[in-house]
Length: 132
Image 1 (cartoon, rainbow, N blue to C red):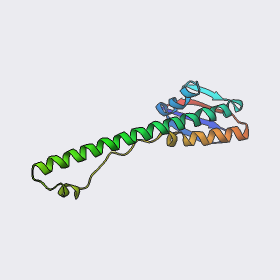
Image 2 (cartoon, one colour):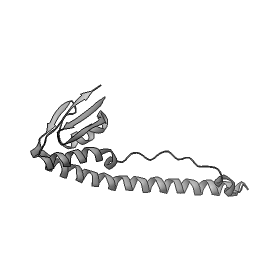
Image 3 (cartoon, rainbow, N blue to C red):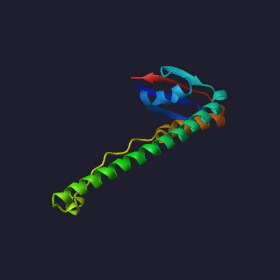
Image 4 (tube, rainbow, N blue to C red):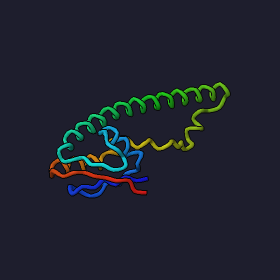
């Protein structure tokens, strides 16, 4: 399902419901339908900015942990190959495919944050409803 955010302050923002829910839960709003009044936009901006910073710290820690684990696994594999008499450099020539990193919370919320800031500046409401 999709959530379409509308405002006279800017263009429509379309999000998957699960992503919109993360933002709307933070703002104590329902995903089915609702409104962020012009008066509520300043507080919403602060809440969202704080959550973005909090999530950036968590995402950085998770990335560091993934890199640490990858390094340990790589070193373990190289050690095993050395013990077996293989040249670990042979495998390095092969292309390594890594999964794409997940889209960050800040990247997902960027369009909504821009609409929120525009609505605050222009004193306009933001409203939404779910579309299937």
